[in-house]
Length: 292
Image 1 (cartoon, rainbow, N blue to C red):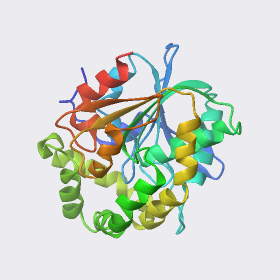
Image 2 (image 1 turned 90 degrees about the vertical axis):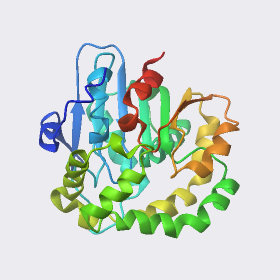
Image 3 (image 1 turned 120 degrees about the horizontal axis):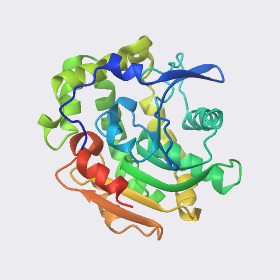
Image 4 (image 1 turned 180 degrees about the vertical axis):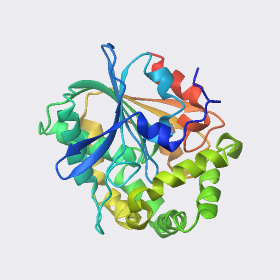
């Protein structure tokens, strides 16, 4: 189903997309086009890129027009210049790109860091500051919809440890490989060859040297938590969580997910899978996304 055995290099992936000027930056975007009535838009996670979806794209584009972009500072998109690029700014660029592509009504899939952008989009949509229409949202492993009290209790003692580990990923390929493999339930599901390609994209256009804004990223997640939780509570858009159950990065959020109180949310658990379900269990991830 997913062409798992077909290796795709960074250069081959880059050929699938193109750069779109948005404000003062160029955003790498893959648009599969086609005659599909429905559109699926994807927002990737932190320190990775659209390349995370290489295993599932062939199947997705049989059912949808698929739009995947590299967020500013990641992959083949332009990099930031010695400044923290906020979630608010990322969202400004995301929405303007979608406006350029004339996207109006689509299904949205987000993972990890991309979840925060999705929540900011929801906050703006709830306040009628954007006219886009979203049919359904799929959140995958990352920032979970928990309340502010639980967030503070869970994350405050761990912020420095998480930040230090993320920063340490940038020191060498060996460290990067070790930590990335630890993000998988079965480390054999990601090869050294694939990780080298992901490392290449992390380096692209001086990206490794200027991407370190994890401390502010963690802090911003806390500052805006009330805004984003309220956005989830207020939205009428159907929401589903597609979650790798063995994710050590978000495992402390799992009790909240099991007991989640948001009436418009369902949870699809992917067993024996950790932080990157689209890479580790692409068939099961696709079943969750395409089951409707």
